[in-house]
Amino acid sequence: MANTCPYCGYKNLEGALICEGCRALLFKRDEGEATRLLGDPHEKIMALPDSKRGTKTLPGSRIIFDLGDPRPRIVTLNDGDEITIGRQGSGNGHTADVLLDELRAWEQGVSRLHAAIRRLGDNVHLIDLQSTNGTYLNGQRIPPGQPQLLRDGDEIRLGQYVIHVYFVYIERE
Image (cartoon, rainbow, N blue to C red; front, side, top):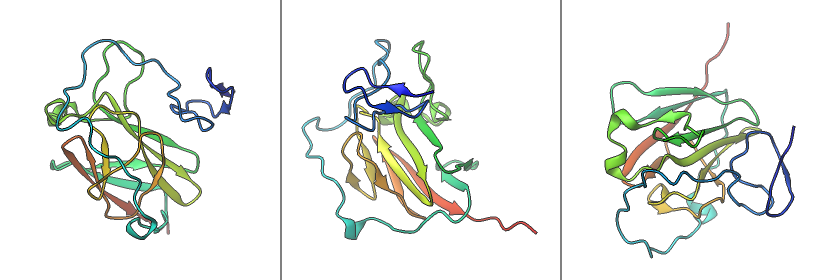
């Protein structure tokens, strides 16, 4: 079943959080506890130049998120899958797939639904979900709603919270 955008009428895939047609959010933000704003809200946001972005494709279906704690998260992403990263929501019905609450993410400016990781074919993209403190790829702030190509070993920063991403290939015997 398609998820039709109320703004432009584009028929998005079921479960999409951002409209592929106009980049609008397809859910209402919770009016509850706000994300703590860090830094300069007027900071210039630029897309990464192609020469700075990775082009390695995901060889298997697993990604490791090194969150800076002893337990890295291993996530399986099949073609067309999308996961969200953030912290526990408060009643709006949308909770991130990878929760960072136990790692004091709120103190570091992570929004409840901060960013998404989407796989299309062999490519994996990072998308900022209009977060309060921005999403950074290898030190460069990315524009909200605009997918940026991820590669093995990239650094993602959600506000001030740093995550390293590793692609994993597991051969089956």
